[in-house]
Length: 415
Image 1 (cartoon, rainbow, N blue to C red):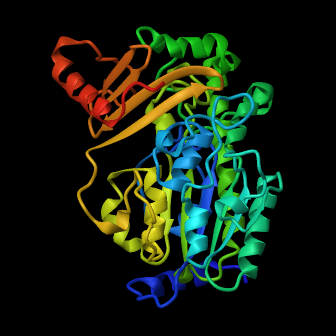
Image 2: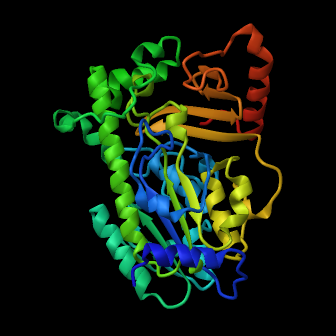
Image 3: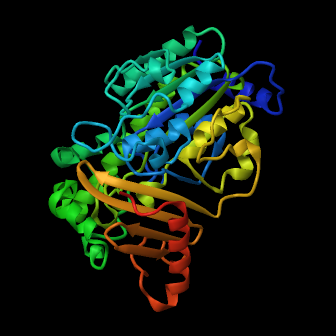
């Protein structure tokens, strides 16, 4: 039976403080290329009715599909999971090894019925049994994926875990051919900066505009960027409608942990850049992350802290009363402990164009350190739009050296 708004709210209230005798079901819903830093308001009624805990500073571990998904599934930094970049014939990535514990295998071993629906992008196989997902399918259209997942959830007996992975708002790549069809929204904001902002920035960003996917929007006018951003918001709203279809598979929120997240963001025209590439600006790194259901009230104290995708797997395990079998890079956010003072992130290659970057982001500062030697240092309190590169300025020498030390302690240059 589909979950009505009244039943949802009633069962959510009953779940507060409830001591569970059975393990909760788990729904993971993943959009593709959705930034938390949207360029205007959106209508997302399904996420809004979910409630729960919304993490305001959630980061992808790398802004690319395959390695970000590996981080979500395994709790490991991309270089530890062995998936540094996209896994397909046009890229340099290696498939995720089935021998690494992941959400599918860990929950299946604990007696869960496991299903995966939609985009995988971690190996060539469509049969994901080796990864612990007894049932897997990809039906193409996002609506079909969500409906099939809902039907599967409704048919399960005993605890289940469903991973639902849709394509939107990744269809923003269609914008060059659809630009004439889009009408700008009245409330969409224009980009804060443009291509002129790339002066003094690492040359990799200019190369992206000159010879990679940035060429598609290089001649965009201010009106075109408003259309880009309007179409993007439309796609985010479509992702929410598919989320609503998936939620129809749940009868009671008191029985189910629900997680909404994305693999990475989109640059949305900031700095004159579209899509994603060898740049680690906030629009690309910040992702939506919402958790609701039994036990998630204990996460409220973490809602404003810095979290990453590597926290998802151990936290879901903690909420379900499971022990993750191996060490991970992330944290079980149910376990308490001090909040992070920084996140450490990485980037490897754009298809077969290697341009590695290591990043540290504290509450105030961000340092992007390219293997080429280029650096970007931003004071996010004074410069939240990351337009003034402070790297090399004498007054920032101490801050820069300390951030370099922390990056080097985490990992050396990326080979």
